[in-house]
Image 1 (cartoon, each protein chain N blue to C red):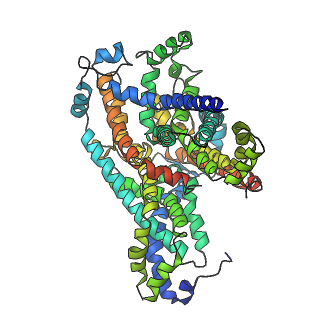
Image 2 (image 1 turned 180 degrees about the vertical axis):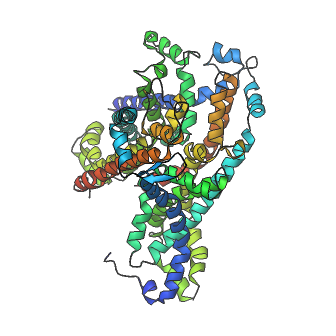
Image 3 (image 1 turned 120 degrees about the vertical axis):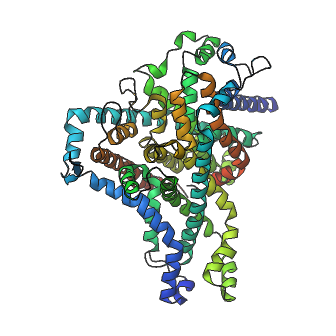
Amino acid sequence: MAEPVPQVVAQMPKAKLIGLLALFLGPSVVIYTAFSIYPLLATMQLSTFTGESGGGVHFVGLANFVTLLTDSLWSTPFWNALKNNMIFFAIHMAVQNPIGIALAGLLSLPGLKLKSFYRTVFFLPTMLSVVIVGFSWNLILSPLWGVAKGALTAVGLGSWFAPWLGLESTALVTLALMSVWQFVGIPMMLIYAALLNIPDELVDAARVDGLGQLRIFFHIKLPLVLPTIGLVSVLTFVGNFNAFDLIYSVKGALAGPNFASDILGTFFYRTFFGNQLQLGNPTMGAAVATVMFFIILIGVCVYLFVVQRRMRRYTF
Amino acid sequence: MFLEQRARALAVHAVLIAYSALALGPILLVVMNSFKSRNAIFGSPLSPPDSSTFSLIGYAKVFRASHIVVYFENSLIVTLVSMGLVLLFGAMAAWALSEYRFRGSTAVALFLSIGIMVPIRLGSVAILNMMRTAGLNDTLTALILVYIAQGLPMAIFILSEFIQQIPMDLRDAARCDGVPETRIFFEVIAPLLRPAIATVAVFTIVPIWNDLWFPLILTSSDSTHTITLGVQQFLGQYITDWNSVLAALSMAILPVVVIYVVFSRQLIAGLTSGAVK
């Protein structure tokens, strides 16, 4: 970059600078490259190979991807997982983010008491392991225990109850809502922080003009935190297209019933590691991981080049 | 006017309390029922344990039937070692990137930030191959190496932002006195990083403690399982034994809740000061 080189560096002998950089940057760059960047590239490379019965591998170009996308043995579960993952993401966007925005809006109201208590409580589920959250909801929704049914009966909706996690039509939505329950703290906290950063003069000016809290929120505050909502969306996207733990701990690697809750993470795990129905296949697993990488890359690029660039105009 | 304001405040609190109940209810329900006998768990799930329904049978079974203490130890070792090294290496790298700007430092910073957005999980196939080749498969070392690589990008990002706010005069004064660069970092700068370190520590610890994926991929024996994987497998095996399941869940929940309540101020301050954008 065109930034001027600071004096410290300019005055330093070259050998000393290289020594210092090696000492300070070395450990991070080495570990990060070896265990994060290199495996990612090696996985992509492996996706162009196929395993031999003898144990070796040979180069097959893009054949694994062609198989994945067109051979019905692979493409049916792949497209199913991708579709389910889209639904999973759509539910997060439609439920988690509006609730997060609403809670952040309420918490940032001037003069609200018990603010830090609410904040702490709302963020608590986010801190728990997905495994714990999955199992806890699994128990609560279980017809065996009957807590969910009892709660619904208490408010007169007992007939609504169904074993949601066990039904093909509702399992995915239920799992998505469990995930929303857990992660609503992240959009809430980030949007809350953005709301606090809005200059008081703007809000005061609106209040002097006679706007109520609700209109101030929708007409002044919300447009100003749009960049943060964009950031929350891309974080949700990356998190959702990389999700695995919840489905695996509630429904197992087979993401039942009948793959109704299968998403890319569980599909990747089954392909790579194997399960009751098939042997693990590292090269096909690498191909699935590569496809997931490009899906996530597309999401991040849409954010960087479309969302963030358009939103810049509205910020100060 | 005054009454109207009161009514509005009440409505806001009603919504917030309702959501608090939704957020806390499931957790309380699990913890509460873990202290009850089997009959009481099913008979009156919503009432807290009393003298007639109190029972620790679930906890006794968890201790007897699983290596829960080993899992705890493993999780502690992996989490603390990874956190310590992420903080140390992360702070050093952040310092070098902001202090010794050189041609290419922006490129290095960008390279290091790839990991914020791209999940390290996607490299699992190659990570497993590497660990097998290096003979590190099924060791805690393998987990620690992966978690350091996973935690570094975010740590460097947060710490760099923080280091840029440290006033110049301190290090310039030290430099005039001829203090060597390494001592400037470890004795002048590092102590000033404390507030940011708390935030980075929480951001590093939580995903590691809660991770299921890498223990599942990289560890295969009981002696190397972490608490999250250990509990997950225990729950899978004993799914019909409700006492044990609830007790195991509670034992996994409580440490996190305690740490969270103790550090929530730092965590929320870190989140809301715009350290993470």
